Image (cartoon, rainbow, N blue to C red; front, side, top):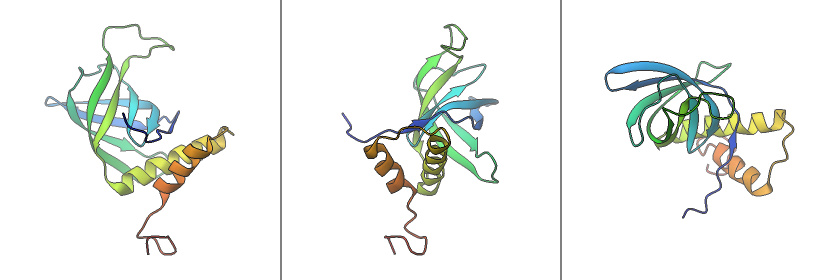
Length: 139
């Protein structure tokens, strides 16, 4: 079992998905640097792997990743408690994209005035450091 801290936030970022020769759209309801809950009309089945593009709000940035479905609400209710959708985990995510997500989570938690656990804060701060950026500890 992993001891890595998973920090997530209620971020609604548009998603485009390509699987089985077709495309569909959705929106994230929760987002972490490890995965996301995607609200969509036609969730895929467990263990399906597909290509996904996240559009970063208020930015020209987009994030492309290969993901795997780890939970799917195909047949259950579609309501506020259990919205139609699926949870995916990132299989292939570039470090720069992981930093973009971490920054988005940090900003959302700050704007919510959320009480951030010190361990989670440290995890987010570590993830947002770009070793190629001038003045960072990696240079």
